[in-house]
Image (cartoon, rainbow, N blue to C red; front, side, top):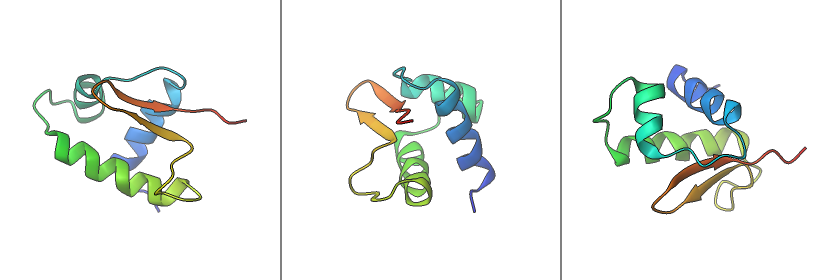
Length: 76
């Protein structure tokens, strides 16, 4: 089961699928706090992947774009 924050994060990524969502935007839109740290985001992404990815070590849906942000790939 997803935590409330994981649900908000997944929802925001899905609503913005196929677009690179910068970390700062996630901090502001999901957390409502522009100073949330990268470590916090990384932990939530890692936990979210364990729920939705067939192999979290080789993510298919939530892509990390180093130095840019994250993207949700719609594989349907």
